[in-house]
Image (cartoon, rainbow, N blue to C red; front, side, top):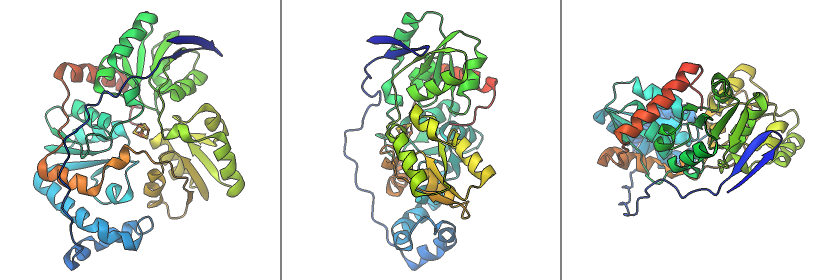
Length: 366
Ligand code: SF4
């Protein structure tokens, strides 16, 4: 372990731990192939009209039979389907009942009376849904849908940090496992991280696990921030040079970036905001031309509601989000797999950290 002081921040450099996820090793049966029949075409025609700007006509016969089957089966099961903004358009617009970022999805799902919650997102998001809806059945279509940020830190790491920095409260981004949330004092989202850190009134806080979001927070508060070297493998791939290239290639383009990007990328951006913040900013400004410096499906999904905006779409895909597919969602509903459970004591601890965040204020972004 190496500790260094850089520009007033305490930087803690710790090798990351193996994923907390228990990976599924038993091969699953292939989902059945479904045909694009005239009846399916008729039932999905109106839906296709909504999404034709982002799903080519030649692809629709592949998606439509699954969209049709999932829509019918979720009604039979009394299920609600959640889709994160980074899901592909055929999922986001085709089968989801609730769309958005991770915490907002879990909170909205808790307000429904659905018996079954299918999470089209990654594992920590399904855990968050379970934490906020402990009495429901929460399913994830692919158990291996993990996250480089969530897997970078464990509850044991949190305990170690507390030993090293006695008295410093632990602020944990919601992109973490239930165990890490439970080991924390308070959670935050990328929308409210600054507000949450300031609310603690502490001179020093431990901020986990996203180093770049932590640096962003440190730059906007007078608080000394102990950072962890967790990164989102999608956002860390962007560079300031990429952004200068977008400006050169697309005159007048507005650049909106997510705070999980490296600091030099954020310095080049016209606006920095959470997933929800990026959406709100597009809604408010309606730029002629914009690039959203985030996972590339988000632009496809936002573009459906904003045909007047030209979205430049550099494609950095999240491989974990992209493990979720229509055939897997259908199989999840048919076989009620894979159920996500959270130990009751861990869930109670995680709920406490989330509830404390919600008391601070704006808690819906992610
Ligand atoms: S986009 Fe980044 S933070 Fe989101 S699930 Fe993928 S790796 Fe994790």
